[in-house]
Image (cartoon, rainbow, N blue to C red; front, side, top):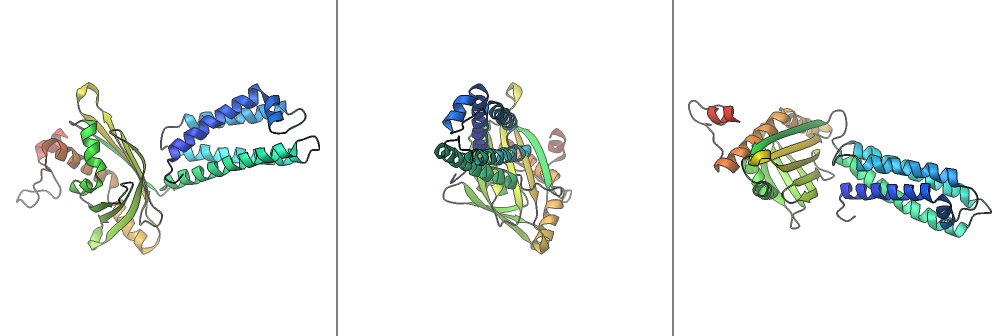
Length: 301
């Protein structure tokens, strides 16, 4: 949990739910005896087992980084609360083994704490999760291998070379955290800290902003080999929202300038850099346009 990966923890808990649910349905009496229950609890344990299996399937069938992941994890927290209440009621029965029930309660409380921590982090990661959040998804096909594109992108200091609004990215010593500075209007700057939440070489880089940053954002970039040997499909997904107040107003202007088109333009420039070796531009020339590439390249893209 020092550097948690919520997706892996969530899926581990999903398999735990299914395993526990199967045990409760298949061998309710043995399980009741193990945790100190005395009496006929078969029907109750089977019902709890069915709920556990439903939660586990719900968790494991979600795609990575889906906003609904937090919902399924919170459903586990609700189930844990019910389990603790049932154990509390059983402990008052004279027939029950209170020592074993106390141990079972401690175990369930530990799992509940893990569920709650994971749920909170998933909720925060979905971050930019309110109705006012800005959601962006763009992709581009680049005639280079996933390994080459991943290696270039993973060195975050390369990003300002093709992201026009990004001024600098500084990585920390462990290469898991970084500090980002972007240019806004009228010389203003937007700054935020970010940490990598998942790093699969040549496949995926996912990140989220740190607490206290100017922008609350989560995002990922995927590198998928294109069919027919046509290079790599690069997919960028982001969700972010600015804070309230004056700083929030500046950030809102920065984010509100067509974020989808901005990322699309950044990916186009990334494609140029990786395929041509430089970003083709006519800025400053008499026939130049405000931001751009040659019309031939534009049309081809």
